[in-house]
Image 1 (cartoon, rainbow, N blue to C red):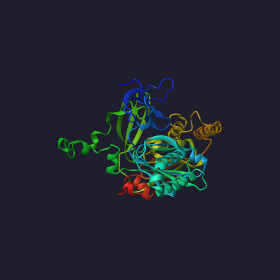
Image 2 (cartoon, one colour; image 1 turned 60 degrees about the vertical axis):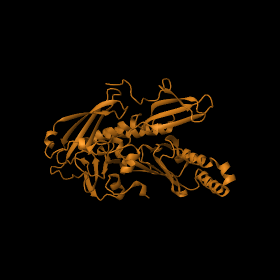
Image 3 (cartoon, one colour; image 1 turned 120 degrees about the horizontal axis):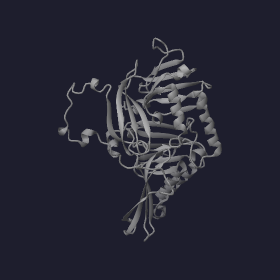
Image 4 (cartoon, rainbow, N blue to C red; image 1 turned 90 degrees about the horizontal axis):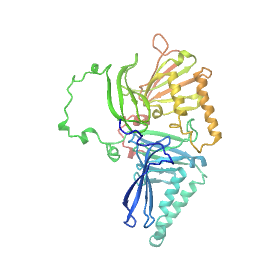
Length: 440
């Protein structure tokens, strides 16, 4: 079934598998060597590391490009920088990331810098380095402008002293940027993430086009009403080619439409990769977005509560207040399971080194021990020794937890609330007629 190895393997120092290409040196116009390495940034995404060197003039250049597919939505990340720990947070940003520091009215635009792995302090240092470039010449030719830039550079340097907290905003239309949570798996109180649907222009910027923009509509056969009735698909398993979300190797996904009693129709999608062995099960709502958001709380008191059916949609946030744990919609995706299965899935994803930010060679022993103690809490929950509340918050209203009452009304341990969505939630669901560039 194609390659026997992942397209983007884990980084192996003993077998880096770099590809060397003879290429033109842009400094002396002789031939140099570009080395390409396809690998993974642990816990984040696939990347292409490019390194150029020229033996004749000594010129070198390093660059990082995303090898991951463009995300379905753009991402906007707000970080309050208050301590040295915040300055040391790891940051991964793509070519399409704009950076803002509102306190200084500082902004770098999208595609003005190459993608890189850095830190918050590294972002400030790179901004300083960019401003200091050509200052020697500028002081002789435009002394007033040079003085203003020197003043601004000092303000940037002052940020690192942390005499006052400041905000850092990353906005990435490709959705492939990330700021580390040093408090993981607890909620990151200093960082907030928002997702937004791209405009048509932003889609074109990242190379995404609608079907009718790349295919001649004249050759498309219109679907006639009643030609493909819904009944024909119910009970049938459809299969289509795709790429593994783990290693990007070609594989196949099976899809089936089913009905959840007393709720609605859903699509169940299952992928099995023969290359890396990854197995995924994902559920997508077969209906549209509900008029109101949905907030569900269920108290897990007994084994009977563990058996409740749960549908967590791809837009649903999950929380366990007793553990101070919040999981965004992208972490677990959409899935149809039970309360026990949902808790087990959270534990499995947190403890898997491929997905957890708490594992790595540089992690402190104290932090690792604390994290292991945190994972033991999940065993206590599953053994019925630690009672918790499961909270599902779904702005799209497409999530569900089974009631144990005979009338299907919420029982005494199940609380369901409908609410009006906020402006930001509507934007995340693509319900606002607003362009990202006008966002303030």
